[in-house]
Amino acid sequence: TRTSVALASGAKTEALAVAGQALDAAKSVKTSDPIANAYLVARAYRLAGDTHRSLGNADAARAAWTQALAILPNPAGERPFEMSDRRMILERLGRTGEAQQLAKRLSAIGYREPEFRRS
Image (cartoon, rainbow, N blue to C red; front, side, top):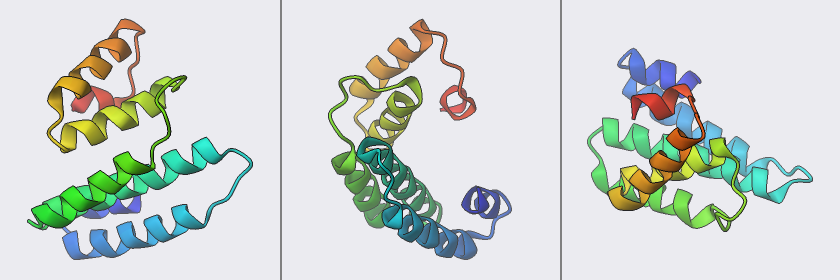
């Protein structure tokens, strides 16, 4: 949340620092649900990539998004919010066909997460 607020206010350097802290924190979380842990880290990488993109560093953004996708477990049995995370990462990587398929599935089940509607 702090990263998003910093980005929205134009404090891009601060946003990058906070995104790094969020990534470190996400990597340190070890719950009894390794799948949830993976999605937490993937979300942090996605946010770091978004921050790099806002700073004009396309290579670092792509690297972060690629890492986010690599961390995600097999999509079988994904819950809607996890499917939405995957869709956003695929979209950022330019894999629009795959992202659109997930968007259609999410729309079909009535998924209305705010970031999903914005994308």
